[in-house]
Length: 113
Image (cartoon, rainbow, N blue to C red; front, side, top):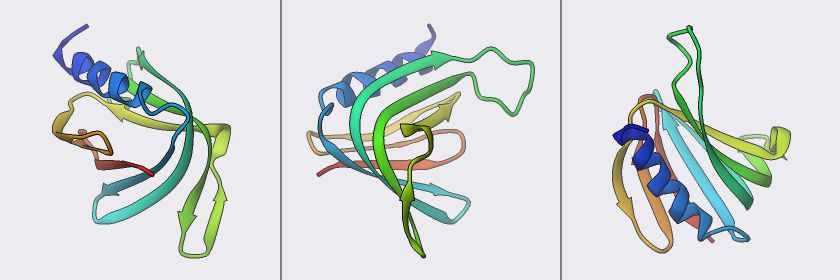
């Protein structure tokens, strides 16, 4: 695994400490902000092999039930899984209650409730 997957593994290790906790995930991409509540049950990282340049080589999966928060209310999280695709991660901060990092496409903030 390369350095980027190691950063993903470091994030995963921190998230593994949060299993059983409620999370608020905020994703900012191209000026759009999405929020999701998640009851974290498990995490994993997968290396994705694809010839498609749009598909990023790694995905961090946060598994558990949750709701996507929209302007119209909340709707169930599809497949009980929240995926964070990445090639590069810049770790901005990691505390006992919050993770904040940037991937190739978005800025993520994960708050433990």
